[in-house]
Structure formats: C-alpha cells, structure tokens
Image (cartoon, rainbow, N blue to C red; front, side, top):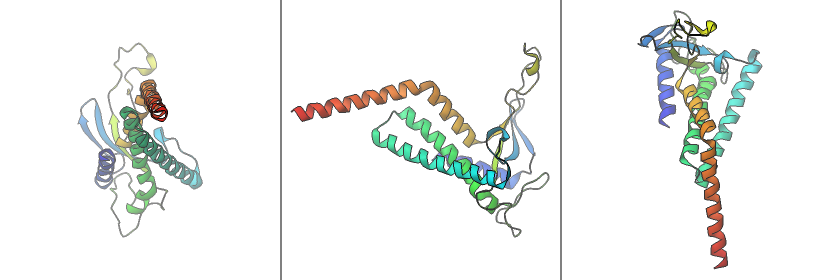
Length: 205
C-alpha cells in the first residue's frame, strides 16, 4: 500500500538524518519536523519494563493479523468501499508502527540528542527484535490565540503530540468509521438482503 511505503520512507529518512529533538520548520507557525522516538503507544503511554514493551508489540501484531483477516472477509463480501478504505487505513497504520517496534531496534544504532543513527552499524542495533521504538516526526506548532476565551488554552499549542503518517492513517480511518458507520453498514445490509432475495427467487424458479 502506498501509504505504508511512504510512512516507512519518511521514518527511515528521519532516523538516518536527524538527531533526537532536531527540528525543521515546514510551514512557519503551523507545522514542523521534530524527531522523537516513542517507546509505547500514542501520547507516550507505555507499559512498564521490558515485559510491558514485549506485550505491547505482541498485541499490535495480533491486532494487525486480525485486521488483515477482517479486511479480507470484507473484500470477499463486497463491502462498502468507504468501509474497506477505513479498515485499510487502520491496518496500514498499524503495520507501519509494528515495523518500527519489531525491527528498527535491530537495524539501526541508537538515536540520541546530537547523535544521528546509522543503518546496520558495526556497533549493532539499539534493541532486540520486537523491542524497538516508534519513530515520530510531525508536530503542529499552531497555538490558540491570546484572546481565546478559555484561560488554560490561550497561547498553548492546539495539538501538542508529535505523530507520524501511520498515526494519521489510523486516526483518519477510525474517525471516518465512527461518523459514517451507519451508511457503511446500512449499505452492507441492503446488499445482503438483495443477495438473499435473488437466491430465494432462483430456488423457487
């Protein structure tokens, strides 16, 4: 899937070009590149210790396999294209972040402040298989205006988390699915009813 390829291309480029915390402005006052590594899930949440990290990566793998089977089932059933697109986005995003966790620790040396990682360096990787970190790089720098009526939000960043293309794909897929699920599944029900009616008609004939 093009999105998955783009996600990995950007991550590998960032990993091999930026030190942790290094920043580049893309659109002044709106968005920048800022390289960080996420040891857990979204917003920095993580399970404690090596066992927690392994459990989290394993859960991601199981979830991705389940989504893959579900997507294949929807394709065979002729599900609504919008539903297929949403599940595909979520699946591609999950796979994108799983690749980081599964193999980046083996393929790259450690990134740190002032130090850019190397690919397959002589010193080896920074973590065992399934124990790597997720690479994040996009950061919205837009802030709430000083006149904003809510005191705690004035001049603060509108969306502080740093994210990647895989995160964006998952978010878009989930949000679209939540808002359009009635249409997606209503159309699926209509298709099922039509198939049943056609099958019944054929039997009677």
